[in-house]
Amino acid sequence: MKTYIFSSILMMLLTILTGCGLYNTKPISNQSFDNLENPILVLNPNPNFPLKEIPASIVDEQERAIYLSKYYWDLFPFEDNTLINKSEITEQAFVDYIHILNYIPFKHANRSIKYLFVKAQVDSTMYTHFASLFEKYYYNADSPFRNEELYIPVLETILKFDVLSNSDYEKYDFQKEMIYKNRVGTKANDFVYTLPNREWKRLYALKSNYLILFFSEPECSGCITVANEMNNSEVLKRVSSLNSFSRTMLCVLNIYPKSNIPLWMESLNSLPDKNWIHAYDNGMILTNKRVYDIKMLPTIYLLDENKRIILKDTSLDEIESFFLSKE
Image (cartoon, rainbow, N blue to C red):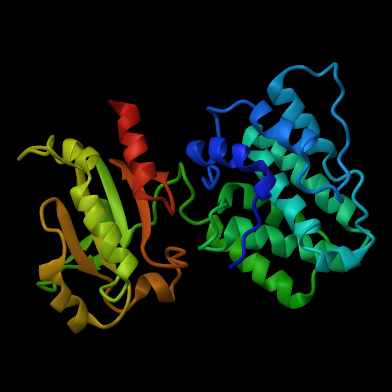
């Protein structure tokens, strides 16, 4: 997948923002808006994209970011759908735009996204194109900008208006249904898992202050790499060291969601053992009934003791950051 980023002219900006999470799907909170504003407004890498000037009277950094997000598309000719084929203009501007959304509160990002689609209604082709851009960058599993929480207002908006084709409507409606399952802050869907000895257990019956839910498969090289990294993580080792006979602070529930059980059984000896539970989904219920939205493997969740979701579709880095913040 080709992903557009800021131009090479702005290597200084890339250096600054890559270090603080340029490719992080979560809002960036430890960098000022000046880091983004100056290169875009002074050394604009997209000179063919018209930007409205921010009034000098607005001096607060976050307020300037909010202003820019509010009026970002005001000078863009949505009626000119030939710009769809000029990705160096439209898609580059879009990537710059969603990066700005990381600097503002959700309510303002929500309003900005909805306003974008109000303006895009002048041309159904352009409207559909922007919907596909949001899908590419906010929803696709391999996108470094993936952000389901900001994709929700996109879906809520485009599904309200009679602009999409029937096939697109069905696709986005399905995505909305899946995103609303197992959202951060809600309780994870309970399910039955089967151990290597064919004994079955329920997720909700597993007692642990924190639980890493790890969906993987033996033939997935990325799964093996991440599993080894988790097993060798000094941060996770420190948390797991608090496990005792009477309390489990952290464990990993590794679920195989596919059907080749003999292959999975053969792989068990090579998988981490201490503080890990290895199990499979007998009958592929999780997949067939869409209990979880597993777009790619590995898929990782972090749950609390009440099985409430702390992190969804997360990474080892984000899990480590969570626990470091607790120290």
